[in-house]
Image 1: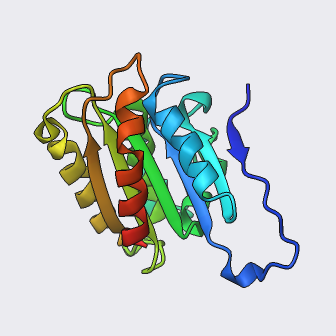
Image 2: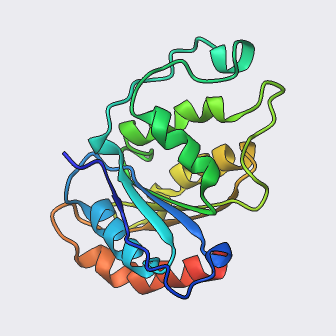
Amino acid sequence: MKRCCRVKLNTDNMNLENVMKVLIINGSPRAKGNCAWLSEQLAEKYSGEDCEVIALKDLKFSNCGGCENCRTGEGICETDDDLKAVLPKLLEADLIILSSPNYYAAVSGICKTFMDRWVCLKKRAGIPQFRPEQKLFFVFVQGAGNRGHGEPAVEWAKKVCTHYGLKFYGMVIPNCAADSRDGIRLKMDEIRMNLSMFL
Protein backbone atom coordinates (compact mmCIF):
# COMPACT_ATOMS: atom_id res chain seq x y z
CA MET A 1 0.00 0.00 0.00
CA LYS A 2 1.34 3.42 -0.92
CA ARG A 3 1.97 5.45 2.17
CA CYS A 4 2.88 8.83 0.81
CA CYS A 5 2.94 10.71 -2.43
CA ARG A 6 5.64 13.11 -3.48
CA VAL A 7 4.71 15.63 -6.12
CA LYS A 8 7.26 15.48 -8.92
CA LEU A 9 9.17 18.74 -8.99
CA ASN A 10 10.56 20.08 -12.24
CA THR A 11 13.84 21.69 -11.21
CA ASP A 12 14.85 22.86 -14.69
CA ASN A 13 15.81 26.54 -14.61
CA MET A 14 14.75 26.76 -10.97
CA ASN A 15 16.60 28.33 -8.06
CA LEU A 16 16.28 25.56 -5.48
CA GLU A 17 17.04 27.98 -2.66
CA ASN A 18 13.63 29.56 -3.27
CA VAL A 19 11.70 26.28 -3.28
CA MET A 20 9.39 25.87 -0.30
CA LYS A 21 9.12 22.52 1.47
CA VAL A 22 5.45 21.70 1.95
CA LEU A 23 4.26 18.72 3.98
CA ILE A 24 0.56 17.87 3.65
CA ILE A 25 -0.75 15.45 6.28
CA ASN A 26 -4.13 13.79 5.97
CA GLY A 27 -5.32 12.96 9.47
CA SER A 28 -8.45 11.05 8.47
CA PRO A 29 -8.86 7.28 8.81
CA ARG A 30 -10.98 7.26 5.64
CA ALA A 31 -9.34 6.47 2.31
CA LYS A 32 -11.44 8.73 0.10
CA GLY A 33 -12.95 11.29 2.44
CA ASN A 34 -12.91 15.06 2.49
CA CYS A 35 -9.40 15.26 3.95
CA ALA A 36 -8.03 13.01 1.20
CA TRP A 37 -9.69 15.14 -1.49
CA LEU A 38 -8.42 18.33 0.16
CA SER A 39 -4.88 16.92 0.29
CA GLU A 40 -4.98 16.18 -3.43
CA GLN A 41 -6.18 19.69 -4.26
CA LEU A 42 -3.52 21.37 -2.15
CA ALA A 43 -0.82 19.13 -3.60
CA GLU A 44 -1.78 20.53 -7.00
CA LYS A 45 -1.61 24.07 -5.62
CA TYR A 46 1.96 23.46 -4.45
CA SER A 47 3.09 21.40 -7.42
CA GLY A 48 5.81 23.98 -8.07
CA GLU A 49 7.26 23.44 -4.61
CA ASP A 50 8.88 20.47 -2.88
CA CYS A 51 5.59 18.96 -1.75
CA GLU A 52 4.82 15.65 -0.08
CA VAL A 53 1.46 14.20 0.95
CA ILE A 54 1.24 11.72 3.82
CA ALA A 55 -1.93 9.86 4.84
CA LEU A 56 -1.69 8.82 8.48
CA LYS A 57 -4.10 5.94 7.90
CA ASP A 58 -1.47 4.25 5.71
CA LEU A 59 1.19 4.33 8.42
CA LYS A 60 1.74 1.88 11.23
CA PHE A 61 2.53 3.68 14.47
CA SER A 62 1.73 3.38 18.14
CA ASN A 63 0.90 5.67 21.02
CA CYS A 64 3.60 7.52 22.90
CA GLY A 65 4.76 5.01 25.50
CA GLY A 66 5.73 7.65 28.04
CA CYS A 67 9.25 6.21 28.42
CA GLU A 68 10.73 9.74 28.40
CA ASN A 69 13.84 8.51 26.61
CA CYS A 70 13.53 11.53 24.33
CA ARG A 71 13.94 13.74 27.40
CA THR A 72 16.27 11.81 29.67
CA GLY A 73 18.07 9.29 27.48
CA GLU A 74 19.70 9.84 24.13
CA GLY A 75 17.19 12.51 23.19
CA ILE A 76 15.44 10.43 20.55
CA CYS A 77 12.22 8.44 20.36
CA GLU A 78 12.92 4.74 20.88
CA THR A 79 9.66 3.62 19.25
CA ASP A 80 10.53 1.82 16.03
CA ASP A 81 7.61 2.40 13.69
CA ASP A 82 6.68 4.41 10.60
CA LEU A 83 6.81 7.75 12.42
CA LYS A 84 10.57 7.39 12.73
CA ALA A 85 10.81 8.56 9.11
CA VAL A 86 7.93 11.05 9.26
CA LEU A 87 8.72 13.10 12.37
CA PRO A 88 12.01 14.51 11.00
CA LYS A 89 10.08 15.74 7.95
CA LEU A 90 8.06 18.01 10.23
CA LEU A 91 11.26 19.78 11.20
CA GLU A 92 12.34 20.14 7.58
CA ALA A 93 9.08 21.58 6.24
CA ASP A 94 8.53 25.29 5.76
CA LEU A 95 4.77 24.77 5.70
CA ILE A 96 2.83 21.93 7.30
CA ILE A 97 -0.81 21.50 6.26
CA LEU A 98 -2.71 19.20 8.61
CA SER A 99 -6.32 18.17 8.12
CA SER A 100 -8.64 16.11 10.30
CA PRO A 101 -12.34 15.30 10.47
CA ASN A 102 -14.37 16.36 13.50
CA TYR A 103 -14.81 13.45 15.89
CA TYR A 104 -16.88 14.67 18.86
CA ALA A 105 -15.34 18.17 18.77
CA ALA A 106 -11.84 16.69 18.60
CA VAL A 107 -9.36 15.54 15.99
CA SER A 108 -9.45 11.93 14.82
CA GLY A 109 -7.80 9.27 16.95
CA ILE A 110 -4.88 8.73 14.58
CA CYS A 111 -4.32 12.49 14.33
CA LYS A 112 -4.24 12.82 18.14
CA THR A 113 -1.82 9.89 18.45
CA PHE A 114 0.37 11.44 15.76
CA MET A 115 0.50 14.79 17.54
CA ASP A 116 1.15 13.12 20.91
CA ARG A 117 4.33 11.70 19.40
CA TRP A 118 5.64 15.22 18.77
CA VAL A 119 6.95 15.18 22.33
CA CYS A 120 10.29 13.95 20.97
CA LEU A 121 10.58 17.10 18.83
CA LYS A 122 11.89 19.03 21.80
CA LYS A 123 15.45 19.25 22.99
CA ARG A 124 16.22 17.92 26.44
CA ALA A 125 15.94 21.41 27.91
CA GLY A 126 12.37 21.57 26.65
CA ILE A 127 13.21 23.85 23.74
CA PRO A 128 11.28 23.03 20.53
CA GLN A 129 13.37 21.90 17.57
CA PHE A 130 11.12 23.66 15.05
CA ARG A 131 12.52 26.76 13.37
CA PRO A 132 10.86 30.07 14.36
CA GLU A 133 9.64 30.68 10.80
CA GLN A 134 7.86 27.32 10.38
CA LYS A 135 4.09 27.38 9.92
CA LEU A 136 1.22 24.96 10.39
CA PHE A 137 -2.11 25.42 8.61
CA PHE A 138 -4.88 23.34 10.20
CA VAL A 139 -8.10 22.42 8.38
CA PHE A 140 -10.88 20.82 10.44
CA VAL A 141 -13.74 19.39 8.38
CA GLN A 142 -17.13 18.50 9.79
CA GLY A 143 -20.61 17.53 8.70
CA ALA A 144 -22.30 19.98 11.09
CA GLY A 145 -23.21 23.40 9.74
CA ASN A 146 -22.23 25.26 12.92
CA ARG A 147 -18.53 26.15 12.85
CA GLY A 148 -18.64 26.47 16.62
CA HIS A 149 -18.77 22.68 16.92
CA GLY A 150 -15.20 22.54 15.64
CA GLU A 151 -13.72 25.53 17.46
CA PRO A 152 -12.57 23.53 20.54
CA ALA A 153 -10.39 21.33 18.31
CA VAL A 154 -8.93 24.33 16.51
CA GLU A 155 -8.11 25.99 19.84
CA TRP A 156 -6.50 22.77 21.06
CA ALA A 157 -4.38 22.49 17.90
CA LYS A 158 -3.38 26.14 18.29
CA LYS A 159 -2.18 25.51 21.84
CA VAL A 160 -0.14 22.52 20.71
CA CYS A 161 1.48 24.46 17.88
CA THR A 162 2.16 27.49 20.10
CA HIS A 163 3.78 25.14 22.62
CA TYR A 164 6.13 23.95 19.87
CA GLY A 165 6.84 27.43 18.53
CA LEU A 166 4.95 26.96 15.26
CA LYS A 167 3.09 29.82 13.62
CA PHE A 168 -0.53 28.66 13.40
CA TYR A 169 -3.67 29.27 11.39
CA GLY A 170 -6.74 27.09 11.76
CA MET A 171 -10.14 26.99 10.14
CA VAL A 172 -13.30 24.93 10.48
CA ILE A 173 -14.98 23.80 7.26
CA PRO A 174 -18.68 23.03 7.95
CA ASN A 175 -21.26 21.15 5.90
CA CYS A 176 -18.80 18.48 4.74
CA ALA A 177 -20.87 15.32 4.68
CA ALA A 178 -18.78 12.16 4.83
CA ASP A 179 -20.25 10.73 1.63
CA SER A 180 -20.02 13.90 -0.47
CA ARG A 181 -17.32 16.31 -1.64
CA ASP A 182 -19.79 19.13 -2.35
CA GLY A 183 -19.16 20.96 0.93
CA ILE A 184 -15.38 20.97 0.70
CA ARG A 185 -15.50 21.97 -2.98
CA LEU A 186 -17.52 25.07 -2.08
CA LYS A 187 -14.87 26.11 0.46
CA MET A 188 -11.72 25.50 -1.59
CA ASP A 189 -11.40 29.13 -2.68
CA GLU A 190 -11.66 30.23 0.96
CA ILE A 191 -9.04 27.68 1.99
CA ARG A 192 -6.64 28.75 -0.77
CA MET A 193 -7.15 32.43 0.07
CA ASN A 194 -6.47 31.89 3.77
CA LEU A 195 -3.39 29.85 2.94
CA SER A 196 -2.04 32.62 0.71
CA MET A 197 -2.70 35.25 3.40
CA PHE A 198 -1.06 33.04 6.05
CA LEU A 199 2.13 32.78 4.01
